[in-house]
Length: 328
Image (tube, rainbow, N blue to C red; front, top):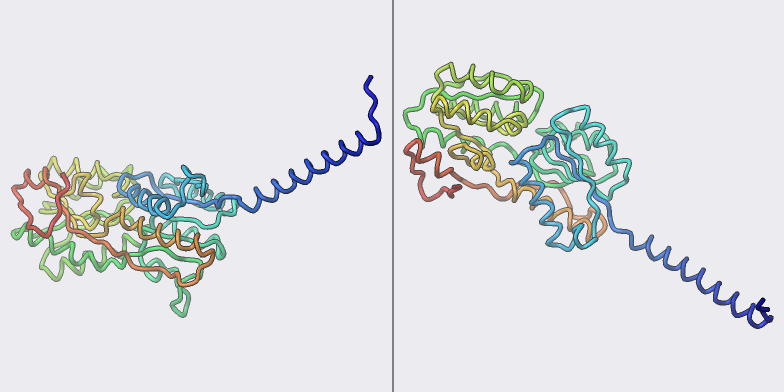
């Protein structure tokens, strides 16, 4: 058996102490360098809305924040269009204590703001805070609400596409969700635009995407000339059903949502979904860099486009002018 001298024991104790101190130092170092956790919540699974999420993540990555580089951790939740699931998802994200939460669409934003007054919320694909009924009696937005909004005024321009592309059109049809404030506000804008242009407007409410086909077919039986697709989560979630029914009746679709054009609408004037998310993501990246909300406020979306679907345009023998971009 090997015997340790006093000298050996002292050396062993010194080495052990150094290892313990190094371990403590590394532990403190890891705590201090812990990567920021962010939350991201979508209300529905949708191809158009997904472009906003991609834009948001790309903007963060451009500024050096990505999971690939291990500079952020993203906790992602999708409520699949279900309100109770949305509430649970928001509560779960808040419990994880993220540095901020990104919200995609109005309902996700409204629920997040209602559940936390502390965690910064970076919105996208949502209306101006007062239109979403998120301002106080003095008209001020929640201090933790940031990101990018739309005013819905662009719908006026979207409606004029109907007359410019189909000068003989007399009746416009649409469906909308009564439960969505943004959809109701957009419908009111559509009513104003149609009245100004002398267009009759046929309207039917829809509760959820399972009703879309039946409601759309009922609307088409009212002899409409054009279908107008509103910024509505039910339409986003079931647009292929709407497009299929309209195609069968040879009814063109005009919309205020550029993302729907790639999915079968004829033309639109509205916010570029990718750029909408990208703009919000750049603001969130600024927050991450400076570590506070100084100088950050909700801002209006900057990029809107006129776009048309080339194959659909050929079907209706339409040739939009050079102010439109082509989506093949």
